[in-house]
Length: 531
Image (cartoon, rainbow, N blue to C red; front, side):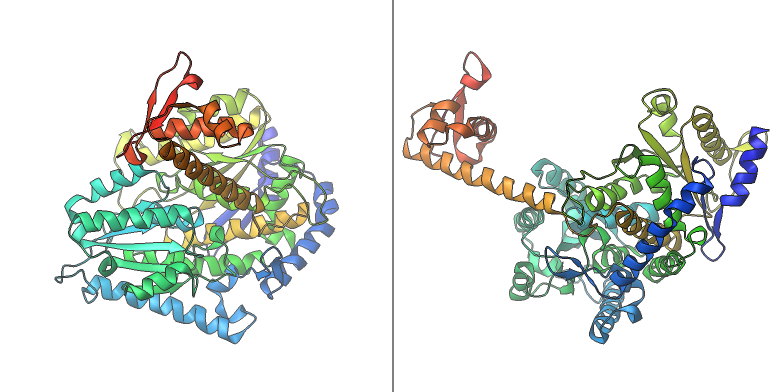
C-alpha cells in the first residue's frame, strides 16, 4: 500500500521536460501541499527578483555590478544592444579560434599542431571547465586537457611531467578576470618557466581569458600572445562556464558548444515559469528549503549514478556554497546561512558512506542523478538478462529505496544521456535554483566577501614572511626561535604565524633558511645562510 501511495505521489509531483528529456522527481521529499501553499508568496517574490536580475538590476552592490550569466545563452535578453553584440561576437571568435587550431592554421612555432591544452585558473575559472571536460570528453577529443587549478608546486610539476615532451605542442589558456588572482598568476609563471626550460617561447603558446584592460590583458598584449578573449565583470566566476571561460576550453577539446548553450537556454526558458509546479529550479529550491528549514540545517549530498558526472558535486560546491554561505542577509541581520555540499558517485557511494547516510546522523538530504543511457553500444550480459548498466540502475533504485525506508529524503534528476545539451541544462538548472533559493532566504547570492577576506589574510601572512626574511638576513648566522623572532619584529601576538612561516621556510631551499631541532617543535631555531 505504501508503494502505491508513493507511485501516486510520484505521478502527481513529477516534472518532465520532453524537449530536454529531463525529469525532476520530488516524491521522496516529505513536504505537504500546505507547505507549497505557504511558500507560494515567497516564490512569487523570488520570480520577480530573478526577472529584475535578468533585466539588468545591480545585483552585486559590493562591486556595483549587474549579474548577467543568463544572457550568455540568450544574448537578445541583455539590457543593452552593445552587450548582446559582444556576447555574440565572442562566441563566434571562440569557435573560429578553435577551428583554426584544429585545422593547424594556428600552430606552435615550427608549424607543429597543438594537441595538448593546459588550462590555468582557480575556482570557477577551473571547476566549470574541468566538469565539462571530464563529463563530455573521450577518445575522440581534438586536444588532451590538463589543468593548473592550485598554487601547489608539486601539483604543477606532476602536470608538466604528464605532458612531458608534448610541451612543444601544448596550447596554454590562462583565465583570470582581474589578471591579479595570485593562484592563477603563480600558475602562469610556473608554466612560463617550464616552457623556458624546454627552450620554448611561452607567448607563442599562450591565450588569455580576462577582463579588458586587466593586468593579464596588458601583459598578453605587450607579449603578443596568440589571442585574448573577454571575461566580463557582470559574469561571476562560479557562473562563468557558459562564457569564454568554459566555452573556449570546451571548443578546443572538440565539444559542441552550441549544444551546450542550447541546453542551458532551454532550461533557462523552463525555469522562468512563474507556475511553481512547472518550474524545475523552483522545485529544487523549495525542496532545499524544506530539507534545511531554510537555515542550512542539513547537508546536500550529490550522488550521480554516472562516472562522467563525478565532478558535478565539486562544481556545485562552489556554485552553492559560495553563493549561499553568507553571514548577513539583505537587511544586514546576522543569519549565518548556507548549505554544505558533498558527493561521490554511484555505486561507489554504497562502498563508501551510504552506511552512515542510512543509519547514522540524519543531517543531510540526497540528490540522485540518474542517466538512462548506459553507453553508445550494446552491453555484455554479466548475468543472465542483466548488464553492468542494469546493475548500476538497480543499485541506484535500491539505495534510494533503502534511504527512504529509514526516513532519509531525496530528490532525483533523470536525464536520457550525458551530452553537451544535458550538461548545459544541468548547469542552468542549478544556477537558477541557487538564485531562487537565495531570494527565499533573503541573502545576496552574487557577492563573496568571505573569499576576499581570506585573500587579504593571505596577503598579511606573506607580508610578515617578508619581515621575517629581512630580520634573518640582517642577522645572518644568528639563530632565532619563533618566539624570539616575533619579539624582535615587535609582533609577539603573531608568534603562531611566525612559527608556521619559519617551519615552512626551513622545509624548502628557496630562501636560504635552515632550522635546528629543539627539544619541542616550537623550540626549533632558525637562521639564514646565504644561498
